[in-house]
Image (cartoon, rainbow, N blue to C red; front, side, top):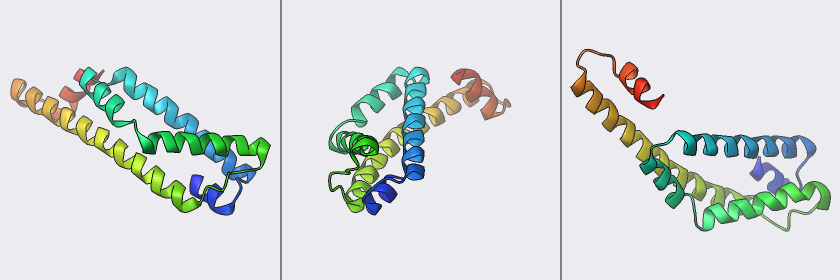
Length: 128
């Protein structure tokens, strides 16, 4: 949605509304992750989800959100948005990879401790 709005030079009402919905959903997802993540995964998230891409995406989001009143996107090009949001997504992938490794290790330990029990049952019981 960001690339569509920035690429058009303005956010149409439909694009703007969807953009707002996606930002809100992401905030909820990140807060939920922080609530249920292991302390180590939470630390990886905090350390990884910082820096220029995260700060720039936040800055551009604020401009996009303000554009409903101002009508201006401050000359942000779609390509710049795409490049920056891609860098942020790459950071999110690092967190995902860590959590996936953590989950694989947990399932491996539980399989060793409870042979014959389906891995999904064991893993789920530890994550609840």
